[in-house]
Length: 183
Image 1 (tube, helix red, strand yellow):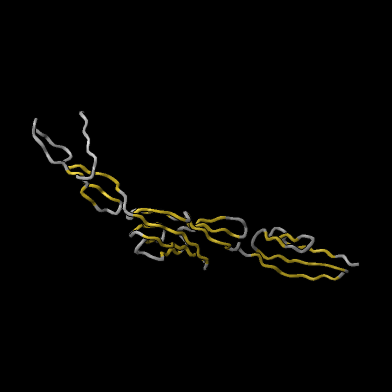
Image 2: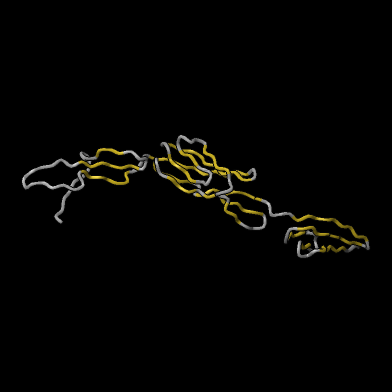
């Protein structure tokens, strides 16, 4: 019957188990040896920085009206268990920039109604998020004139103008529900 053992020098860099499983602790070079029946073998192992395992983009699915913007984030997970925000480092692209474009900081701008995929790429790994762009939303209503002086018994035509998320305006005078109150 034979018995064996394994050891490493530079234990601050890596640890090796009794069954030969090497666990990297920090970057550097470690000398690993295995002995059995008075015969020893050795290997030099270089421990490098942690490996990029994958990227996620969030929010994974979102919906926003034409003219609105939204911040996406790209997050990387590494072999040492660490997580890193890559939003500023990733390369961002859109599969249909006429629907939604994305800038180098991950900010999405909705341009036209429809759906598109937005991608973040870092070190050859790509992750995507789906964006659905909807019709522009009504943000505010402007009444004109905003201040007026009206003699008792006279009438004045007011106009309600809708201001939308895409920068457009629409006359809502006929479709708005009007009301008044005394000050």
